[in-house]
Amino acid sequence: MTTDDAYREDTMATIAFIGLGNMGAPMMRNLLKAGHRVYAYDLSAAAMDAAAAAGAHRADSPAAAAAEAEVVVTMLPAGQHVRAVYTGEGGVIAAARPGSLFIDSSTVDVASARAVAEAAAAAGHAMVDAPVSGGVGGAEAATLTFMVGGPAAAFERAQPILQAMGKAIIHAGGPGNGQAAKVCNNMILGISMIGVCEAFALAEKLGLDAQTLFDISSKASGQCWSLTSYCPVPGPVPTSPANRDYAPGFAAAMMLKDLKLAVEAGQSVNAPLPMGSEAAQLYALFCANGHAGLDFSGIVTMLRGQG
Ligand code: NAD
Image 1 (cartoon, helix red, strand yellow):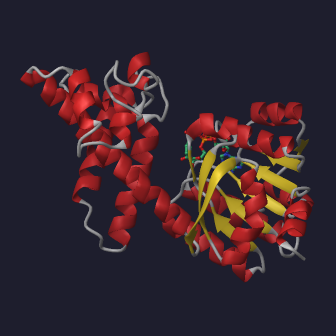
Image 2: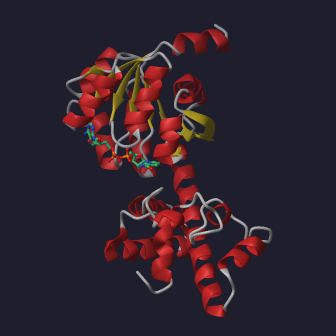
Image 3: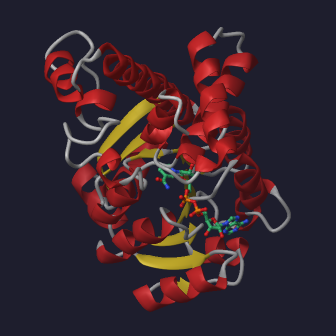
């Protein structure tokens, strides 16, 4: 069979989709739009009603959804939910058809991703961890970036499914490496955002105009995504959350979750993370101050001594 034949065959897949929250619901709708048949399951009755209205079949449990499908996609909050849905009582690994493909797009700890992948492989199924970057906007527009960990053959099988939900699909290596890529990337983001915020707070006290700092640093060695695409002060980047009172965007609580995963991963392999740990502490403080729901760039208010 050629790759094109395989692609055509896979574009007509029957998919179990479990976890229909802020991200899962629009991702699932894009699978429907691409012509796939979807059996949907979520603990929330409202999420199930919305999925059925969008054209999905209702399933009564994760196991019932998996039993109907050849591909299972999950988009759940954290590691314990993923372990429960895959390997817990009534889990999808035991219920799935022989040789099913599992795609977990949740952001979870590397250890949970590897444990579940091992259980799937032992039961004769293919699995990839495929966490995403791009947020709810990317999920709606089918422009997510997928960081994929798993065997090459499983990555190839997952491609046509992921293409219906995203635009960049990158193989990061073996099981768990998608999650490793996600925590490393988001740790860079958390640390760099705090650095940019500190620079704007310092500039203000030194009498240097924010727009002037932006014009200089965006063309100098301080240039980074947190500055040029997501500037934490109002003005220089009109689309950044700073221009709408830090409505997310990417909530501080989510950044804290990802930084905690990075710190946990660092501890598990004895990797010193002095800046990552500090960033996690600063986001914990920002969230504890009542700002968990604000965009993560809003931490500039705390660093200015305001929040
Ligand atoms: P969410 O809380 O909106 O959705 C999670 C859904 O999972 C909920 O509808 C919940 O009812 C359901 N659920 C929980 N346990 C379940 C179970 N046992 N069986 C079935 N359904 C169950 O979360 P979200 O924002 O959609 O995020 C999902 C994942 O994607 C998280 O791991 C998050 O870190 C990651 N992520 C989110 C964003 C974002 O911007 N929201 C961006 C990138 C990655």
